[in-house]
Structures are given as C-alpha cells and as structure tokens.
Amino acid sequence: MYSDKKVIQQYALACLYYATDEVPNVNNTDPNDWASSRGWLDSPNECSWANVKCDEIEGFDAVRVLNLDGNNLSGEIPPELVLLKESLKRLDLSENKNYNPEGTVAWIGDLTKLTYLNLRNSYFYNDGIPDSFKNLDQLLFFDVARTQFGGSFDPTLFQALSKLEFLNISFLNFAGTVFPTTIGQLSALVILYAESNFFSGNLDFMKVLAEHEDPDTETSPLKALRANGNFLTGSIPTEIGNFEIIEELEMNYNTLSGSLPTELGNLEALRILSVFGNKLIGQIPPEIGELANLVAFDIFINDFTGNMPSQVCDLVFNTNRPLTQALVVVDCGAQANGFLCQDDCCTCFS
Image 1 (cartoon, rainbow, N blue to C red):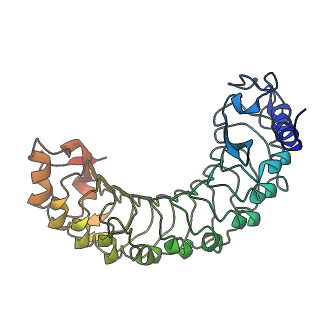
Image 2 (spheres, one colour):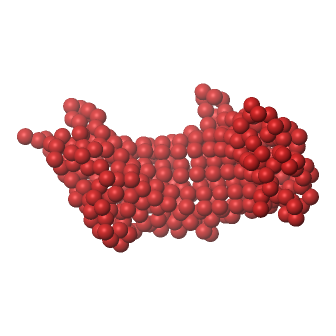
Image 3 (cartoon, rainbow, N blue to C red):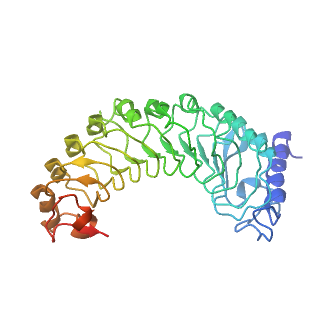
C-alpha cells in the first residue's frame, strides 16, 4: 500500500507528464514526445524516473530535483507541481516549448523551498516577473532570460531574493523602466546578466554592489557582469576597482560617457573587457596593461583620443599572454577621432 505522500508525489509528476508530452499549444502545434522519459509512469519508483532526484526526508523519498531542461515539454506546465512544495529545491524547465499564458505562472511562487529556478527560453507569459516570486527567498540561482516576463518591473523583488548568487534577467524588454538599483543589495551575487532589456538609468547599482565582501576572499564576490543592450547613461564608477576577482565585464551598446577609470587596472582576474557602442571619451588608461589575463578588449564605436598605451600593446606582443591583436578591437580611420594604435597591436572595426 502506498503512503499518501507517495500518491500525491506521483500524482503531481503524472500531471506534469500528461500535460506536456506531445500536447500541442499555440507555440508548438506539432510537438514531439519528451526527449527523455525513461521510467515515467512505468516504474513504481518515481525517484528512478529520468531527470528526477529524491532525498530521504523523515523516512520518505521526496522529490528534490526536476531537471527537465531541453526535454521537449509542450502543452502547459501544470500547477499541480505545487504539490511538491515541501521538498522541491531545484526546478529546471528551461529551453522548452510550453505555453503558459498570463495567469498560469503565479503558482511557481509557492515553491518556497527552491534554491534553483531556471525558466530560461521557455514560454511563460506575465506582465513583469510575477509578484509571487518574492516568496522564493531561498533562491541562489534565478534565470528567467528569454521568457515572456517583459513589461513592468518591481525593483523590490531583489530585496526579497537577497540570497541570490546567479541572476539572469536578460532579453525581457523592460523598456521605460529604470535599471533596478536594488540589485546592488545582493551581497552574495557572483553572476549578473541583464542584457537587452532596454533599461534606462545609470551604473549607480555598481557602487553598492562593490561594497560587499566575500568573507573568504575579503573582496566583492562578483565574477561576471553583462549589461549590454540597454539605455544606461553616465560614467563608469571608480568603485569598479573593488571587483577584484571579476573575470567578465561587458557593457556594450549603452550610452555611457566619461572616460575609462584607471581603477580597471585593479581587476587582475579580468579576461573580457568590452564597452563598445557607447560615448566614452578620453585616453585609454595605461593601467589596462596590468590585466595579464585579458583575452578580449573591445572599445570600438566610442570617442577615445590619443594612442593605445604601450603597456596594452605589450600584452599583445608577449606571446606568453592570452591577449592577441585580433582581440583588441578599436575604431580606425575616419571613425577613430584621432585615436591611434599600432597596426600589429589592434584590429580595426569596420
């Protein structure tokens, strides 16, 4: 005889399977079956089903993980998954072809034990990130890029999700919305992707973010920042020099102004520095030449003047360093505004 807990758990998973296996919707009128469905509804032990993982909780094997990324889910993800709320910690529904229209998404906010939620590139619709997601205060990983959560934006979301280490809110189109400065309050943030959202505002959030310290490294924990494709204005704050372990810094296609701060030379772990498509001016700081791990330096479509510092070119000429001529991309010719770079140090953007 099955326990009530087991019956409820199997029921929730069965609802998911029947609702999304070869079920047509407006985005997918001729769906395939699940890419991986080994054991689903065949084995009496749901913990052995493909992409399901369980942990024992008080003598019961409870579902802790559902990894269904890229599994050809169609139909509509059913709310019955909320029946797993007492145990489910990881839910990955990314890269699927479901259709969840507005009004069919809020239940995810009841999965309050989640530490990992990935909905990237799946078809969940809502005017902004659902308000109920504020309940997910245990989340460490949150990826809703390329969903249909564009529109309005409530910046208090990140006051609730204060434990986040990974945040991806890219390609959601928040046109007319100011970049949420509350992101700066995420003291444990390691990865931040906020690309192509058409946010306005400036980089003040970086000033607050740079104040946080990882207790082990005694520096900011941030390792990657992508804020490409927005309408961000103003200068790059000097506090950027506090991101001492950052490896990737991309702020392309905004309207940033002012000069590159010399404090960039503090970022010894930096591999990618990309700020093309802005309105930056002045000379390239020679401190960039201190970035021994740099593999890409893209500064074209700006208004820099002067010469590429010899210190930067030395990185290119040193065969023991990863930076090459092809990866130092600058404006040349009529677009260069008087900026000069040795032919064997830079590649011209055209």
